[in-house]
Image 1 (cartoon, rainbow, N blue to C red):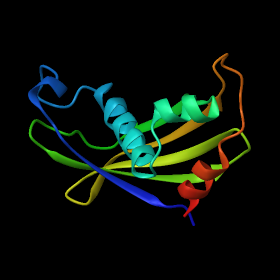
Image 2 (image 1 turned 135 degrees about the vertical axis):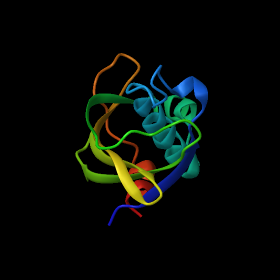
Image 3 (image 1 turned 30 degrees about the horizontal axis):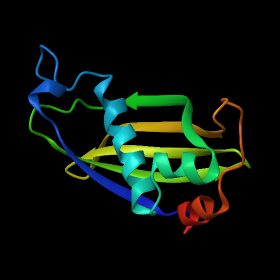
Length: 132
């Protein structure tokens, strides 16, 4: 069973559009922050992955479904969980919730690549920590 990661974000005025709701592209920023914080919580950073293992984690694809809008000053929770692995990539399910109700769902395919952009094996330590 994969580990679940929780991240809280508050919606600021700068996150909203003229209609007072979160601009659609900003949900991707919330998801990115949650993924980064998940990696940090495992005692890794994007910089340390590059320095120690010569890899970066990049987004290959993202499928996102907006169910309900978030608004100014909402407190949101992002739940992230790895769904599956290959040697060089993993699929992460991420949900954004407001008051325990899912308002956005996303599936993000992440790939471990070397500094030349070629797929590279996910470091074993990271993979183990993502799973437990």
